[in-house]
Image 1 (spheres, rainbow, N blue to C red):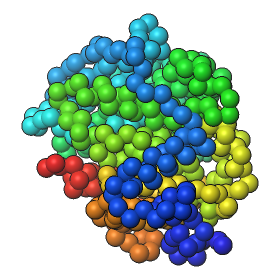
Image 2 (image 1 turned 90 degrees about the vertical axis):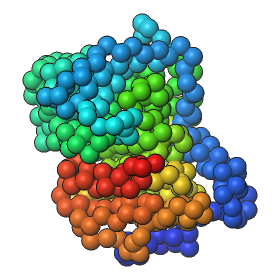
Image 3 (image 1 turned 120 degrees about the vertical axis):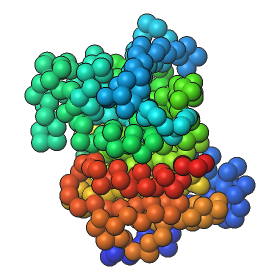
Image 4 (image 1 turned 90 degrees about the horizontal axis):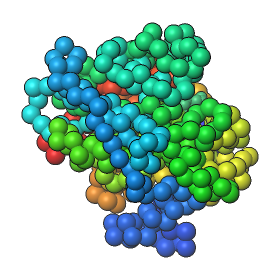
Length: 406
Ligand code: GCU
């Protein structure tokens, strides 16, 4: 059945019910969810789709190399920490943090990976330029003409700033923490050739290999390990945030790591919040052919079967429950199937309610530019695939409700 009628996808529409276990048992209590169903689902997604992630690496170390209490005209304390997941020397991930000054701490924070380098999220000349590979050009989304032979240069400082309204977030009392996706794992060929993957050769073998989306998700957890050591930040109030492929990673991080107090997916689409069952937008075939490194090779077994999958993304989202989750779509982002992202949430709602959280207070796909917020939040914004101030306004409002005063 096509679920494009404006109707809401529910178990009766051919989607597996999050509250029925693989062995047919109906899940009726929080205890059964926690002990039986959630572990079963996480195990399923790791095995069939994202790949198995390791725990905290034994040799991981980190080194603060910058702390400027007068950054951004005195508005923030800028902290930069080099994370060495395999110990030093070895692959290095820079974690950039801005903490608002003049606010009573420790403060809640948004933690997310960025697309174009830490230095691209703000013009601040104090941000260390990444030494990792950078795409030479990516018009029309971002002007990377200043990148020279795949190396970051001063010219690309701040080119991605419109998606990271740092001052606006700080003014609301939140810290911002970010890392560059390519520091963590390459998103270009040779896939798995740099960053974290070479530390785990055994996880690259076979069909059930550790895919890049899961590696990025894992890096968010490692950054949270580091934030737990930063007294200016309240690590119990950290939101995992991500846009697009990095939104897929944020959801998988939020699903697995219960330390994330909140999860935000900005237009994560296929392999993120959208349901494959609808057969709308990017499908499993496209995902795996354009981005063969993102998911475990095992996921390719489902190519062509989008509408008959024995699972779908609502089951992954439900693993975030009862912690709040916000999913945002953009109306022109057809690839991500905006309505399918809404339906992905709606189909997970029963789990949130079983666990005592509020669901998503919308019976139908909301009007454009209307944010609906309960224990689950959603909006579809006007315009294209992007992150805008409108999106951040909604995340701040949702976070105020769930993280402030906690
Ligand atoms: C491509 C891909 C999407 C992804 C997006 C992005 O468009 O098909 O799945 O979300 O890239 O990360 O920008």
